[in-house]
Length: 126
Image (cartoon, one colour):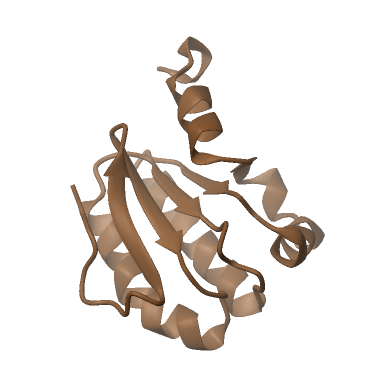
């Protein structure tokens, strides 16, 4: 299990929910926050023992560096046979993620509960 580390509480928290590792960003994902979050992303890759869920419900803005960070996390998790799902993506981030085609490689869910239900369904189990 990985849980909140040495990161500003205004940036993000990490926790375990129903055997899934969750990163909940608490601010926008721009160049400044992505640089601060890079150690968290690396630690999530190394320590997470399950799929990673990124709660973006508090993210009102994302730029290209935020998208790059999400895709970096996705690619590293795929190599480890894990998945990345995004939860609660709002208007501007949702628009930009669709514009860049990220919705074709990542799964989006409205809520954490919806995501957990989908991941727990027999269709998604190997």
